[in-house]
Length: 259
Image (cartoon, rainbow, N blue to C red; front, side, top):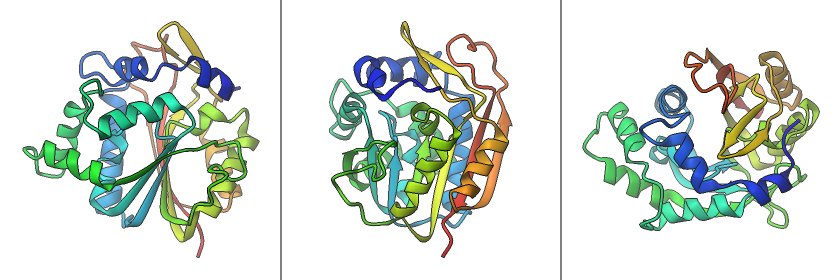
């Protein structure tokens, strides 16, 4: 069972999470995980036909890396997260605060994929200009943006989020069903996360996750009313940091809401 939202609100340190997770030297998800995410999203937004006016990023955290390819094919990006501390860290990057996390090493990787390795600052500025709102969301509400009623968007992107907030697979499926109201007919749902994970550690604090299998994941997506267009799974190869994050596999799902 995942840690409660209140535990995250009270005890999650966004700045420490970014440092431990995405630093160029020793970040536990920098390398294998970020390479997987950036590659799949680059392909999806170039060859996969996923584009439109608005992308809604649900459960952004304090991270920007998963949005770097999206800003090339969407006119507007809306980011959202439950935690005020995550939204504050994201805003620091938007405003070029001197205390903001430095994403340069990851921005360079995306620029190289796109064949523009010298345009890192241009890429960063483009993403900043595309982000139109930073909102609070709550995955466990029927309308996650209550009291705001969001107009349906072309695509929802969700990275490392739902297994943090759902206590079981039924609740996970219900969150996906609620997303239906937020996506236009024929619109896209992109999910990137991990399988068979039970916890991760930030500093001295352990956060529990809802373990998720491949079969449970695909059934939940289908039961929620989506058509799976593409599913990519890859085993975890670096087992050196299992004591601070115990996931066994990573996945990328591209699903669509029926017309």
